[in-house]
Image (cartoon, rainbow over all chains, first blue to last red):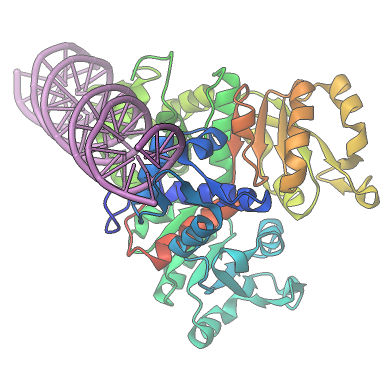
Length: 216
Length: 216
DNA sequence: TAGATTGTTAATCGATTAACAATC
DNA sequence: TAGATTGTTAATCGATTAACAATC
């Protein structure tokens, strides 16, 4: 609502989606787009788009609309995708492995520098060119390499202690895949939760109870 | 707000989290809990908890609070976790594989009955006891086994066509991991999006821009 | 200039919080 | 009975939408 300062979480959460659509428009070779046309494609109101963007600056031009390439760039910069936040993955099970290989960390503002697990057996294995390290070496590694972000792919029971440890080691943000609500205990740093089973249960509700309205 | 009828998405999305906390309370051996105590643990207001629960029924008792085991059961039933929605996973790459092995589908209202991929080479491989089938056999499989849910773990480009195909084959809900916004094109069925890179970019913003308020 | 479309303010809508009477 | 705590209504707050003057 206000040029910078305190942007609401609702707006922030929509930014990546704008970014994604602008990416597509760019690939399509589109040069300009109006809030009206974008609203049609994204399934929201033109008003909301203009409000959202204006939280960060006047990127459009009356009578013309928005320049696709420029807006794409602006949003990348707002999100901070040009950063290379040093990142470690904790837990090299199925999920940790999939995240490590599947996500394009570099394009999203992160730089993956370490993967840890507590199973001796898999230590040394290479995932995306990085060796799996034993969790016991986490302290030393952090003191030396100073990672800023941790991706938590561990079972619920391990999550709490690991979060405490990581935060005391100077971690500045957590991408949390464990089914444990870290944010209640740690309001001091940004924690982004990906509670997959919550999402799955929501789908169950919507399929069994509702007929259903759309949702972004 | 109203006893059944049209529950808002905000409320629905909070249900799995209530369920998770009640699960913990049960394990802790707690018999009863007040909205006040639960609010303290979950980091929200007692008022909201009472409002939310009252959308579905009067599960509490004045002067006592809520019976943990009973409320746990009620929410499971509201979410429909006792269903066994027949489910197929499309895409047996890293992510599909991790989802297949990692998620407890049975405990969440689903029953995994098939896994598909377009790579001949991996067809026949067993994942969680299920053979990877070739995507060309999807039509026949659906006509025979009538799956209700599809989990989409395919690249963006493949997502659109697959969604069209699946819906025409009678799929009633999609758990969408592809970075493609299916919901705009298909408002007719519930689609639950897990846009991992959106979540990652949001974390990037929050770490680089904000100091940060908590978030559930 | 006329038409299009933004940036921005005002109006509406919905969700959250506070308050309190009902009741266990 | 007195204390606790719900269910529910009313008040507040925030987010979305509509409207329109500014301007390219």
